Image (tube, rainbow, N blue to C red; front, side):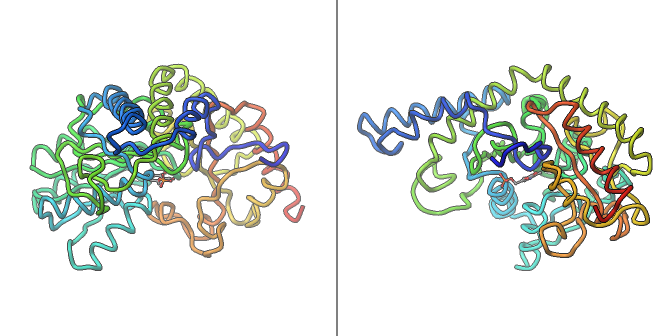
Amino acid sequence: MPPRIVYLDYAASAPLDPEVLEVMRPYLEAVGNPSSTHAAGRFLRTALEEARQTIADLLGAAPGEIVFTSGGTEADNHALRKAIDTFNISTILFNPTEHHAVLHTIEDLVHQGKIEAHPIAIDTYGRINLNHLEELLKKHPKALVSVMYANNEIGTLQPVREIAALCQQYGALYHCDTVQVMGLGWVRVDEWPVDFIAASAHKFYGPKGVGFIYRRRPIKSLITGGAQERGQRAGTENIASIVGMAFALQKAYKQKHAYLKHLSTLKAEALSLLQSLLPEARINGDPSPGGSHPGILNFYLPPEKADDLLLVHLDLAGVCASGTSACASGSGHPSHVLEALGLPAEAAMRAIRLSWGWGSEKTHLELAIQTLRQSLLSPTA
Ligand code: PLP
């Protein structure tokens, strides 16, 4: 890591917990393939099945309902592409502020002529309109519904229990991208009739490049090849990362109350700093404590007040944050999430997402917000 950085981009990726790395180490070094029947293979297979059991127990699932993937993107692709294939679904009802892992998959399926897709209406916080979902379900009762738990850019929480109940009532299937909330310890599929969920380890202090899908009923494999994952996902398992992910999730569920308190305290501090130092800032998404992810805050500064180099000012001050506009990565387009909320492009281009976690402190938020204040006073600084 570069020296003296203040990391406020946990929603993009949380740092690997050193304890997780230690748990992974023997499996990084171990010889063998979990599919081999000899002792070396059996050692890895046992670890693999223990990890699956751990995750299943935490979520209230059966071990056979958990399929390991290369991360959240593959999990979303797997659920959407293979649910429609397995159950002959021809309609997807979706939240327009989903992650691109969902939206681009839906676009591709529409493009291939496999499905028709209908966006569900949202309010100015990005929360779906349940009445509109119900109207759509009346017309398309056998649809697949895709609505995430918490938005990765603005943090807005969706009414996931009501959505699941409506889907059950009309006989639709529900896929929920839980990537941003899995580390909060909120997901229990025995208490929530969701059909598919997607998760990714690097959002809860596990390694990057590993995740899982929970599916209530078997679906076809996305990746063809060997018979790994009971024929649900071919390819030699990423055993060290899977073991690390299970440990990281166990730790997250154990510490969930302390974590929620830590994140919520920082959110209250961030909001109060914003109010005192940047009163011109406008919050994107639901500002109420119960309405959004406790570790994500997204806001913009009015175009007449701010230049479009806010992230550069932060970066020069050593603060790692995200602009939610893809223009920050060079494409020149504002974020699809902010556009869906009705934000004008010039405002969306100035959006900043701060997201925090275990390593974050109030002083980090102070540095970020004071830097932004400074850049408003001397925009070319
Ligand atoms: N879904 C959401 C809501 C996310 O925030 C992300 C990652 O940012 C993904 C899916 C993709 O996960 P991964 O990075 O593991 O592919």
